[in-house]
Image (cartoon, rainbow, N blue to C red):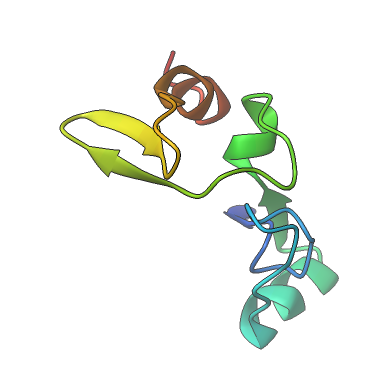
Amino acid sequence: MMIVVSACLAGLKCRYDGMEYSCVEVKKLVALGKAIPVCPELLGGLPVPRAPAEICNDRVMTADGNDVTVPFLEGAGIF
């Protein structure tokens, strides 16, 4: 069985701040070929680095006030 894991947890520098937040267990799964690292934000076309974002009233908003809901949904394959 193959699973999808967060790319930043797999050690890829794709977080909003250009860093990673690796997890030993996740990196091990990827190394064993049991997991595929994916970054929905990158798949949605957002850059690295980028402004941090959070969900506010059913929208995804950056800290500087930009609505990035569509790229998040596209990256997640929902839109």
